[in-house]
Image (cartoon, rainbow, N blue to C red; front, side):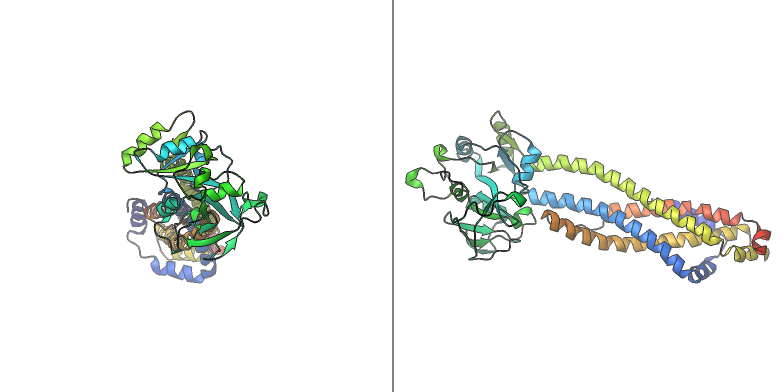
Amino acid sequence: MLLLLPAGIAGVFVLWGFRPLALVGALLWRYRWTNLTFVFLIAISVGIGVGLIAQERGLRKGTARAAEKFDLIVAAPGSEITMMFAAVYLQPSDVPLLSGEVFDELYNHDQVKLAAPIAFGDSYKDAPVVGTTSDFATHLAGRLAGGRLFETSTEAIAGSAVDLSLGDRFVPAHGVGDTAEADAHEGHELEIVGKLPPTGSPWDRAILVPVESVWEVHGLVNGHAPERSGQLGPPFDPDFFPGTPAILVHAEELWANYALRSEFTRDDTMAFFPGAVLAQLHSLMGDVRQIMSVMAVLTQVLVTAGVLTGLIVLSRLFARRLALLRALGAPARFVFAVVWAYAATLILVGSLAGLAVGWVAVGIISSVVTARTDILVTASLSWPEFHLIAAFVSLTVLLALLPAFMAMSRNIITDLRA
């Protein structure tokens, strides 16, 4: 309401003592196709602006939701951002491996409830194949949507978005994307025995396999001593542990996570909270959001300035009618009120239509972003977008005083003779 107040005050002063709405309605109908063009331009400008800003907020919420199951990540020293994208959002990365001694230390730590290896590097079509444990699958999604957890190294669990059903078999490729070697693991066939429920994260398109399967398919020992070679999951034997890019750690108590981060931030390991790293990125995105807001307003103002320029030209079409009104005794302020109310109506209608366009744009952009990032993005218009529209209406309505003043200042005699 405060943002709309300048427009309201201007309207009171301009329209005080006059009733120009009937004439404004006649002008709107007389030049209806031109007016619809102006309204369309304003609506598109407003709609795209508020849609993009709402989308940024939806993306922040979506990325935070996708990372909420990853309390603490332990990896080899390096970039926290790179490791977070690799372990949480499954972006392909070449990273060093952690040793069996590090995993054993975490697994046997008094404060650790869950320590799960995350081993990536293989794929099936566009689905990354991730080696881990059944406890990790339970922690990630709770109960399965169908089937059961894997029990042998030739079984797998498919994410909800993976185009594989229970009982389907596949052979993983070595690598991810265009560089993947499809026949590198020929003969190592895996069977889907479980399906994860939707998580709204990139893990919906992942295939979980026992980490032993990842090691075995690359010709490595499977993490267990020969006498226990058929075992799945921890405890692993440090002497037969080939290594893992990352370890998900979940503690019993919140304070324990901070203690573990401090304890495992050392020369040979890096411990970090994905949520904290994401907060830093969101802070940067917050700055970008401010820039986007300013750019959206400027874009909308430029569009409206173009519309107002068009209105100045359009006002010449009915300049003779306005001059006739003044010749019949209408005050110059009445002409000012008519032209301003005419422009303000187009701006207000265009902005309201822009609200509807923004609502549609948010849905379309959310679908596209979700499909491209595999992060469930659900954006909707909220108070920041309404504030932006209100500020836009006030600013452009004040700018509309200019064509109104120019119309009022025109020479009556010249317009009547035109």
